[in-house]
Length: 129
Image 1 (tube, rainbow, N blue to C red):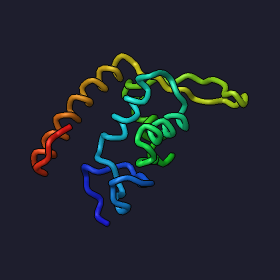
Image 2: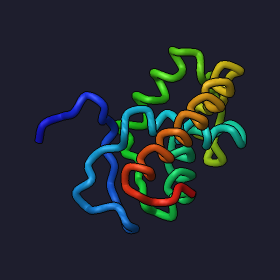
Image 3: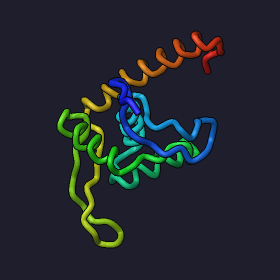
């Protein structure tokens, strides 16, 4: 399979209208999903992945091999910060939260996503939601 430059992030389609052979999310989509998920408050990586899965009614399942590099990259870009803490089972966990820069990026990317989906809907001859 040829890897297209604007595509990234492997996902597993569990159910829904997405075809089973959809191997990747559009570039930047995972970052937007992470930012939106963390808008409600700090979470550790596993909780972020589960929250995305739940919010998409099991349609998307983010693999660890995509999630953790994205969290690392977003932290390096100043969109997220992390703190070490303890889980309920007394294990060390890294808890991520949005920074002011991350909140600003979320607002921008949400607007961009809305414009993108409207444009695609027009090409497909559908009414945007």
